[in-house]
Image 1 (tube, one colour):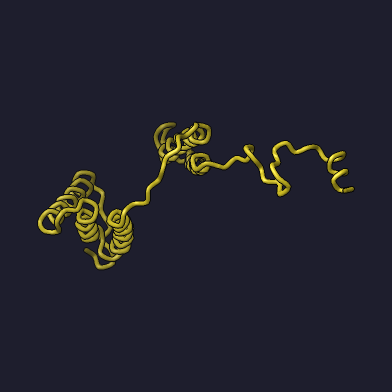
Image 2 (spheres, rainbow, N blue to C red):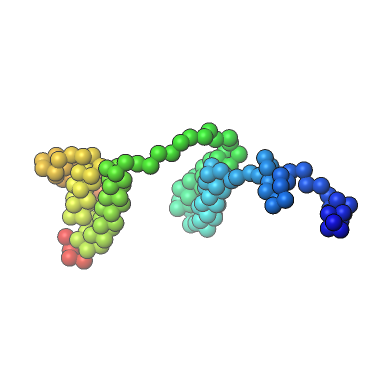
Length: 178
């Protein structure tokens, strides 16, 4: 009884408390995924802008140099993060992908990991050919022979000619020198 009198006279009333457990009613706010994404995007944009500031002394001019791309990306991420943070998003229902789609996603991630490992051992040409053939098979659902092999060879040859012959950029050969 004394505790109830103390609460009524000393403590201010809690209009938003619905029961004795202190659960909040309509005033309780949940942080939406858009707001979390906005905060993360702003932080990533800030990191990119900090990198641009760090690279600024190595510039050729104001708009030419190693700082330009991180500055543009960081600025856009910060602006879009603020928009994401304060814009009202619409509610939507998320459906979990079916088994075939999920296997395709996992296979793609696995193939990119294998490509990264192969790249270090066999070099650009062989690893890009193997990865592109398998990705054309997994993502594009092309038959392995002849379409995936043909498209993989064409992509590898095009990238090789474009970078090595036209742009004079050499590709890594890997540990075995291919």
